[in-house]
Length: 247
Image 1 (cartoon, one colour):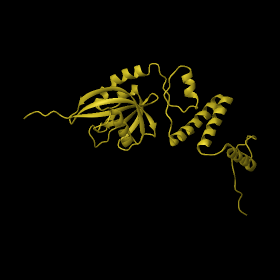
Image 2 (cartoon, helix red, strand yellow):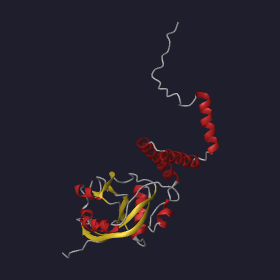
Image 3 (cartoon, one colour):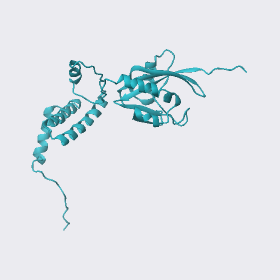
Image 4 (cartoon, one colour):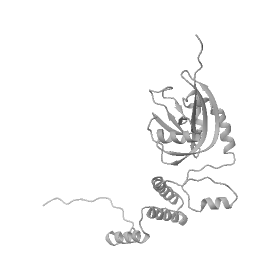
């Protein structure tokens, strides 16, 4: 019987990072390589570039928009059912958060922890190349995943450095503002400095602006509360409220 070679399937995967954390997804139990972990991605359709395919796959399988940056590595791997030609691309999330639309589970992990994860064989085979690329790519780079003030990118560039940043969607912006408020409150509690109080105020003003609330309306709401219930200057700590027995 004449030997028939298996078809080669062109696929793409994303090395999606958030700071130093990488996004890994677990394959469903009913699919090939069940419950193995992989970098998200999928088949490259006819007429698609790897970048276009990765954007589409992340939209379909994870419900988010990503931005491919540069090629990391590629290899050919033979499974029992198919031979894949796999391209791996660096990418970041442009909008949204990953959702479990098709995968069993997902997690963010640092590169050094991937050795302990049961990866798909092709993904595992790429790890040495990923480490070399990661070391080269970020040798002179500090990674952030941080909401910053509007003028920070300009200030970085004025100092002769380059920076990459994204413009957040409205929903993601509000979520990050909430996180930023908690962060600034924590920093103020630790330092007690006026500068940290100013940062809290700046985040509050940004939330007001996003929600379409004027500063005047905000200040009026504060005054109304003060007139009705007072401020906090007396340092009162409520302990108990007892209801008197009925006569």
